[in-house]
Image 1: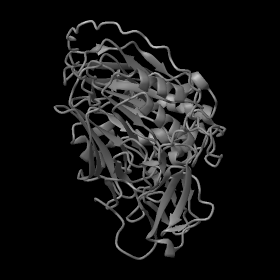
Image 2: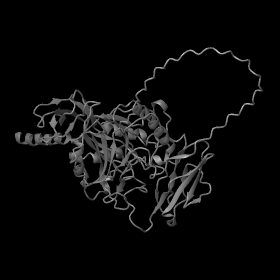
Image 3: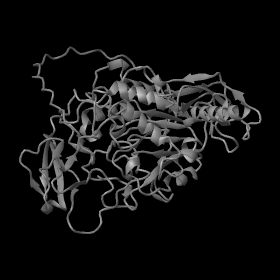
Image 4: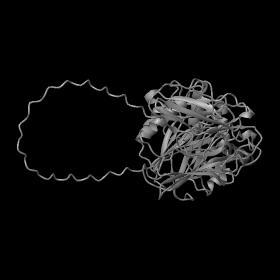
Amino acid sequence: MRSLLLPLALLAMVGVARGQVMTQGPVTGGVTPSSANVLVRTDRDASVVLRYGTDPNLATYTDTTPIVTNSSSDYTTIVPLAGLTAETTYYLNVLVNGVPQFTASPYPSFATFPPTDSAREFKFVVFTDFSNLKSLTTTTPAFSSAAATGPAFAFIGGDFDHRNPQGIDAKRLMFQGMYDPKSPYMSGFVPLILQKMPIVHQWDDHDAGENNLDRTYPDWSISQQVFQEYVPTYPLSGIIPGIWQKFSYAQAECFVLDCRSQRDPEFDPDDANKSMLDGNNLGATGELAWLENGLLASTARWKVIFTSVPTNTSTKFPDGWAGYQTEWNGLRSFINDHGIQGVVFISGDLHLGAVDNGINAGFPEMCVAPPNSKSVAPHCATADPGIWSEGYFETPCSGFGLVSILQNPDRLVLQAVDQSGVVRVSYTVNSADPTPTPTPTPTPTPTPTPTPTPTPTATPTPTPSVTPTPTPTPTPTPAPPSITMQPADSRVMVGGKGRFSVKATGGLPLTYQWQKNGTPIVGATKTLYTTPPAVKEDNGALFSVVVSNSSGSVTSNTAKFVVRGVAGPSLVENQ
């Protein structure tokens, strides 16, 4: 009997062990100076306890109250931690049905954030547009290169990955694969990023459901459910669908946009009815109002806005902000009219590491390359690369973004970095504080010198005169036109359409006449001119615009039309 019971006991132990495992996690997000949220997933119903402490060996620790996972949430749970100490590293172990999932240090860890409104020097890294796991054939050093910079947190942008998952099972499998340390060719992502620092995540089209999806996508509720099952977030709006959220780190306040679930279809007319952020017409409770109110109320020196699609108007039309210019111009005017300083945008979707100083959209922007792209130069980008004032890189196509916030003097540095950790494009945004206007010292009013009172003189009787005819008040001459934003170069592939725009002030009405190589273009009389489909002979053409009113006219600078696909020197700048 004893010999029979022993094998049965061993089999029971094996069965229990197989049923008591963590399959994904811990992944930490929603971190503040005093709290955090930690994702854990098990392979079946199980009791989960999170053990945490400041001792790297967890000799002393605190255990959370057990939480039971179940199939309704795909055996995931997000464990909240509260009462933490600011700027402190916490180490984690996960107990599944009482069994520790890590047996020794080094344990997974994360660090809490500094107190709000404090000032620190820090860095964070950005990954976006992951290749489909099933298509990978080689690993990437991007994750180890990024971890070596010592980031405070990692922002993970959209297209995580590119499989266009349909249905709840496919959407869950996507996250399971991305969080699995055993996934092939994802060297370092789980142990060096997900298990070593806080993350923040937003979706885009290929991970939320399908290419170029918008508010009309029928499965938004499923996408939202899976996102909240697998992503430890900051507080969301409660609107479904919707993942916009914000957080602060020292002197930076960060706004995470949802550029998909609220947007109108990209081919709708670009007018006041077309929106990227409020296509569902939520008004005061919607994402656009949330962003504007948040920017207006923010006292942070830096306002970092994560947009999953580029703001740069020279590329990704109409899927990017270039196709939503009415709303973009309104948002830009709101920021400028209210004197909101220190606004920077971080974008993805173009699959290109690039930086612009703001000349192309109004604010500094960094577009981030994929960490594990399968493309090769000159075909990294998913659209024409566009014009980037500081340039872009294409050799290799893979990389990440690095943002450094520094002091003395205050500045924010945008760096597009390749997969090996080499900075390829960099731009420094200077202090967010506006230059103060000196208050002039008042000039003392002189004391008047007294004068003798004159002897009164008799007033003569006035001679009547004819009342002159009043002179009409002349009509004021309108201010002559002045160009406030010059046309920028445009780059397209053969068959693409170039876009040139201008902004001007002066007495109304203003008229516009676009020219190609000095010759007026028939019908091109608006602030925006879109070319016909480009042919190779258009390469190198120069476009300008004459702005006129009754007081005169002014001609803009020329902008170059670069048509890719034409033989010639490389068009990549500032690599």
